[in-house]
Image (cartoon, rainbow, N blue to C red; front, side, top):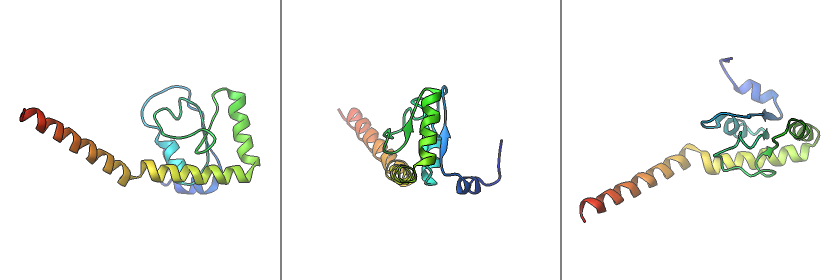
Length: 122
């Protein structure tokens, strides 16, 4: 359902579990969790299309038992939880911040315009 403010829920959470098994689109909840500094356990499908590394930025497990083990591992290992939280947040800041996305989009537009300009003048 909907909540008025998501931040209080992230403040109470120490791990984000995203057991996505099918679907498409952008994985905003994963990026949001990482941006809030919460380590994420997800599936291969869950992080499709995201530039995230298993064991560094997130933990990936596709089978239910392995998924549960990874969540349990994070809940019982504060050092791993802290490391993944730091790496995940850094990955989001470096690869998915609005400034980074805007810079990439602008570069793509400039390349497209330059390409189009060359075609109309050849």
